[in-house]
Image (tube, rainbow, N blue to C red; front, side, top):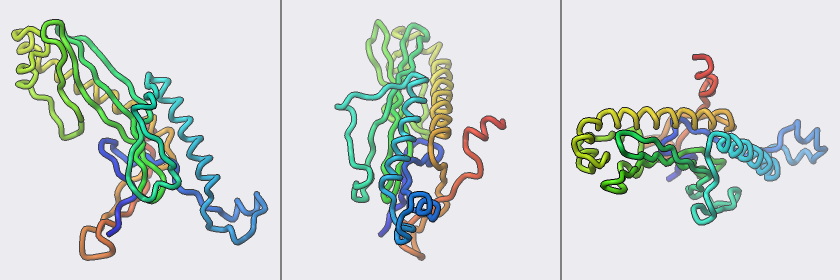
Length: 234
């Protein structure tokens, strides 16, 4: 059984970085290498390209308020020798907070690099939502936000997020509207950064579930235009 190369949870596309590089004829001519090197894996070129892309990505994230997590919040790996197993490393995080109807709401976003099964990585993110008020203290609204999750009025009322039940009942729908708007804006901003910094933007073109090829085998193709180009054109 084979496995698709890339894995993501929340990103709308496969924003890929660090794809394997192989020696081309241009490389051989420029570097005066042996012709036998044509098509061979270029470890130095792959690492150099990856490091450069990663540096640009981190700079862009920091410009909009993200910061690198401390060492205890992430693990390191040799990305060129990870033995074909999926895994993730946290690159950066941020917290968006706002006050509404007597409560403080926190939207925490963590940027992830998901290691490819065979080559490269793709960028992804996780979102959680929590808050607090002076009367009731801390509350959690969502540990793992995704497109299938929806905020529920009754849940907000049960947790009395405003610290005043009457106020919570009155403002619950407005709070949910504010949360959706804030999260959507943050996701759009983050994915535009991914789009401007990544090497490739791919979609899952096909996957073999049964009847042909190897079960689990998958193929990818590139979007005709980058996400940031689509947004600029709009």
